[in-house]
Length: 407
Image 1 (tube, rainbow, N blue to C red):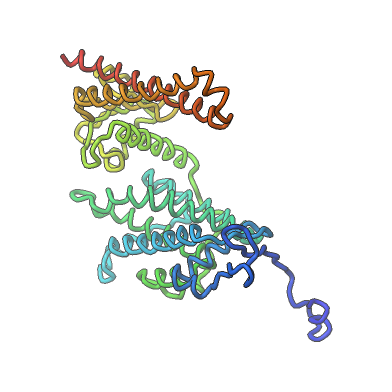
Image 2: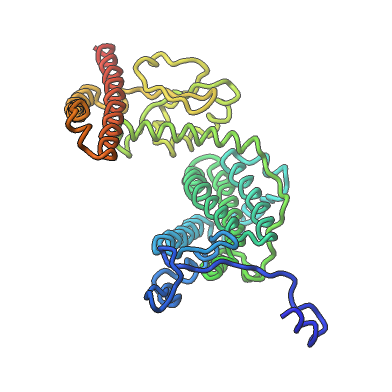
């Protein structure tokens, strides 16, 4: 092809050759009429959508074959839906196009300025910094034809950072009422719009249809997405704020895990004392409303201190990270007496199961005659049961000590 191009046109027809792997079926077999495993792309598009199919095919590692499975297509269809729902949420929370003053305030934020980025509130500074890191990484990967890397990084940023964390945190700003509420909301609106439009740009080569549709639904679009300029690289980011927000995330996760462990009702708001040094307390306390929203805490009973609270011995102690801890009063989370009864019954049941497993392992007839894999499986079950029993005993001991203290 190169030789013919030079011969007939006098120029080299192309500079790069991209060699991709084969698309195989879900079991890794080559598609053939004989096996009857040919996947018709038109049928796939009807079921999952063009964007989901394109994204799935592009996520393969360069030069390696890709096993095309229903699970992958379903996952990427869900990703497309998530992108669409995020767009709907943002559109519903932007001011009316006729509200000139509100739009002037939103468009006044220039995120290519280091001063603007550094002065943003913590969640906003974190998500903008992460976005700028993504743009640099995606641009470099596109230049090297590492399309799969771009897709995976963008997927992770959009779902794990933007949708799961920032959109949820922004709700506190958007729904805030009272003094300063409007300007606080405009910061969140500006960051939501800026981050989302750049996500659409990075994803457009993979998913041209849904990204174009969402782009043109956003206000003040001068051009179609396909002819819009690529995001600039080397934009400002604040690594200090990224680390601070990661600490904040660790605290939220620790509280959420404790709530799940003690089966606290999702709607119930609980008290908490956050213990850290003054520097950490300063930036965590500044986002107390976001912390309360994401962790379902009672804002009136959320305290920040650099020393242990007075009720520490009657609280669940959480270590979120180095120098960042939390104490959740147990009485706020569960009915201690009822929980003691529940765990006692559970412990009795687990003990019976454990005794049965140990009896099996102590039987020479079972150990000698049963297949090795079966014996090994019983041993693993016994070890696991022993660990669960020890954990339950420790929790019961902790709960009983709280019952005595409260009495």
